[in-house]
Image (cartoon, rainbow over all chains, first blue to last red; front, side, top):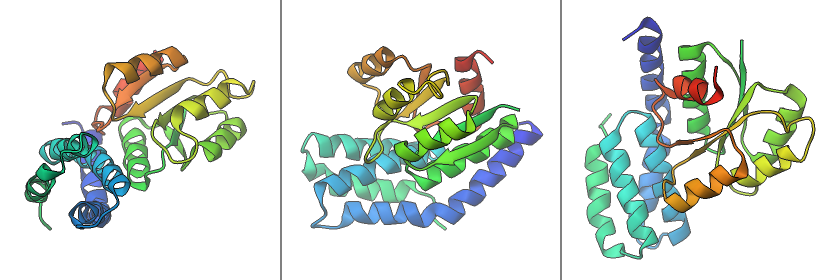
Length: 92
Length: 122
């Protein structure tokens, strides 16, 4: 990895720590029992993009599955997928 | 030094993309958080290229692009759309707009500048 890439990687890790509360707020939207379907879809969509960008491809892929399930009306799968999403997001 | 205008409604996407393009390519970055602001900044600043999200509240990316194309001050600025959608119908729709390229989210911050440079022929 070049010096520029190392610097970029460190800066993105710092941004993750700064912005992780935004990700947690979006996950919370998905777990709210009475959440607005449009808000849930937007949260899943944004999570997919952000988590991949921060370097968490597995979590990003699960967020995409949640987005697809919401679009297809397959809401029965959401709690299981959200639990998997929480597990895939690095702690602290 | 190339100047890039990033138009995206998500603060963290703008932040990471800005950082990545500055740190890996040394490009100067301008930002806007919605299509209307993006049109104004593009006309004022005349960036060398624009990286713009497709899904934004209010004016979405394709609508913003069309408005820029209708303005002589911004019509010549290359635009790269950034989208999470990968379905064929979307790709065809975006290709038909006349944008320079379509890149997909989630993007890799380490290679974003290279992908853009390749698309722009830099």
